[in-house]
Amino acid sequence: MKILYLAYGDSHPDIESQEKVLEYTRDAFSLSVPEIKTEKIDNLGALNLEHYDALILFFHIAEDNNDIVTKIIEYADNGGTVLALHGAAASFKGNDTWFDFLGGRFVSHPPLCEFFVESDAFSGKITDEIYFVEFKKDIKIYAFSKYQGDKIPCLWARDRDIGRVVYLSLGHDIEAVSSDTFLKAFNLAVSILTTEKS
Image (cartoon, rainbow, N blue to C red; front, side, top):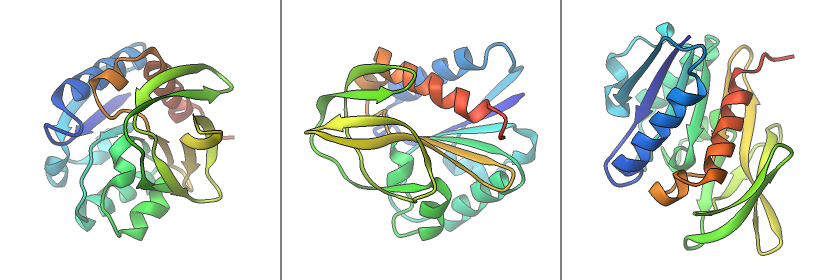
């Protein structure tokens, strides 16, 4: 199995957070992955994605970039699997094709705060941004952020015809990604990504 880890920027996500998530990626796939390649998202155009079994996306790109969107979607439509984190849902603003692909998009968030994340597999506290999202009705939700009595989806999956997309909204900064709750959520996301479709 070969993994391509695509990150972007030096402030959001910051370099420390990018490195920490890369460490988690290596650990999560350690038993089956001979290769994890790291690239900046703006190098995507030069890459041949058919060599990779999964893409890990950790970026925030506010402006629309249809070339990047198209290449990622074509990869998934050819059977690839994609795990997108945090700012991916706030990326490519106004691009409804990206919204449809990811299964949800960022609407707003309150200031950084401590909150609980709950799933059937784990529960725990984290200090992070809670993403309020608009989402497609056919996503399968695996975890929620709890905020002021509301349950807000923070981890979901959406199957394509042969590919799969998993999204995790957590991961604003190094404090968030260093938490045990983020690690558990990330490992659950990887498990969903790699589970055979029924």
